Length: 508
Image (cartoon, rainbow, N blue to C red; front, side):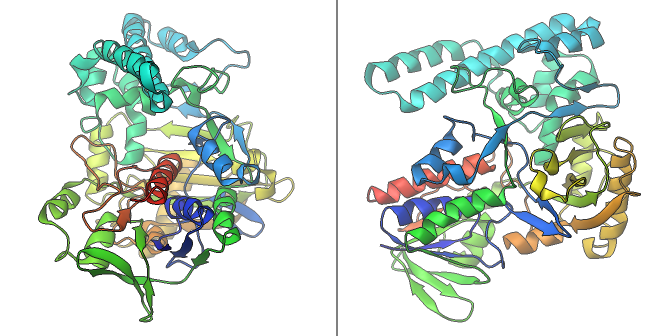
């Protein structure tokens, strides 16, 4: 079949690679001059930085992302290294100890810091273990068949009884149930701000999966080495562009095309089915299947048309709450930062008012780094991303897509300076020793992703959100990517695209 794919992020490339490998004629259309979407590595003055993924899950041996690369025959072209990260708060910082102290060392450290909460911490970790057991059973059930699948489902039902009383809770309720200290509540829930989501909007049962202990100590046994659901976290060596190039090479090697700087004007719908795409220059490309990724409103309202979309799908799309964007400052520095930050990545939480910070940000008020940020040194695991003796630095934080006061073009230098100043509290000398600087604002991300409102991670895990399904009401039209049912994240969009491609190959 002739297959048209709109968007060359990891969803579009993964689907295209599977379909091209299966013998279909694949053309990927990308409006930006470079492929990869936000899974890309940018360079300047000999330095390189990723603009999207950092420490990613699912690419260790046996994990879903690595299996996809193996199925496509390009696993060796996107090597990864298993790593972890740090977490810093104004009151304390936790980095994994030099000598391994077991999977619950953070719990024991927190007991010493908060002795009045010792019993509460034990209770929370019992809940954490129950959720890990339930999730691990679900992962095993994905590939089980027959009596084995039935037995796993029975065990899942039994395991669920221990947490079902919290199924309708939100994250704020969960934290209030377990802890009294606002510091501990922020410690376990702070990552939801990365989604520009408040604790009161996030589903309680999802909290453990967002704060896996393995993210903070790579020595903790992970799936699939054990049956634990705790996954490994990895960096793509050489930058995430290696992942883009590896998967894209499968499309090219099998006769497919990836056309950059090529904007699709509309998806052609005839008699309720997608029959091709029209390019901005007027050229019409016929196709027997069309896959579109990117923003759900852009895909369905602009490329297809509201008049063609069923009313219930319009309502569903408009009811989804979306993430906001990010401000990312990339630096090239001429000193070793490890005396100040001992590993490549650390999250810095600077506020206990997660609800207020997120709600103000949604109204266009940028916290200027005072709410929190992360600092990442990609050259620590990928030395080629910086000249010898120098280091690449990424500082980024959540940011409003549209500022309440001024524009990003007008204020980018000012707001970047303020963010770097906040980071310099933890890594002194950043400004003095900067050799080169690149600022990426929400306006830059909008151009790269062809979104009218940039949503950095797609559809956030908010109670009540229901992104569009892969299979659309229009025959032969499929929706993939971070704003589809797969949800965001490199692993999720690749797994979703893999499933869609296999369904098409099987005749859907």
